[in-house]
Length: 252
Image (cartoon, rainbow, N blue to C red; front, side, top):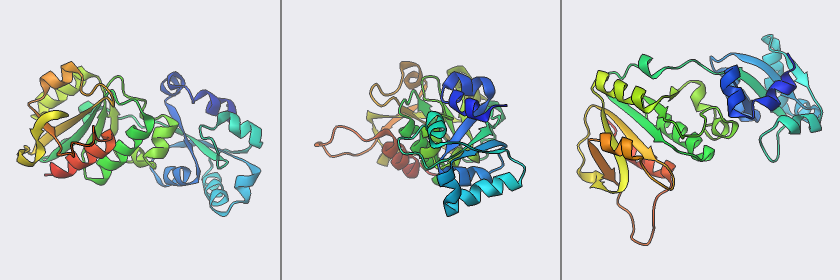
């Protein structure tokens, strides 16, 4: 397989979905990938990266495990890179097969639901924040940017290599909530102040689109909608910040 061509192709969501692969770019992200249980198919690097201590070490480590390592020119690397100032190392890996139906909520669940979140930087931070705050999983509904978008992967600092971040339809989400008796709460500026909320043991928290908020279908399904206290001089929170505060406030 021509791994350089594959890396270029994987910049497109349809190609990632078809190949069930993604690209991890940058030294730190590739290091996290190398430490994860995911299958790494290939690593591409430049001469400059090979001369760098950290980048050279992660490339050599993957090569020692039998992962094909391909040195390319700076121009070739730039044609596959997603960053403005590439560090000269990227890896191609297999997406893990994760299904919402297989997720065990346990006795105390906190599931973060992303309802059409479109900024990849926000999605990456949301995944990382949910994992850091002990959430059970992140569920991305249709309209949300691809969880395996290169910027999402970088922003999450490789969190989803181990943490369950799962794509699901609205119908799949509702079926899961019903089957496991998981309540669904939403977040919105006109909701009930979170300080007075008494969350159940199993709870899914939905955050909505950066501009439009929660979709009508999801809001209609919520048994409660909560809001965060905020200065009247500020219009709104960033969605990732709001989700982090909400998850902390509603922790089991």
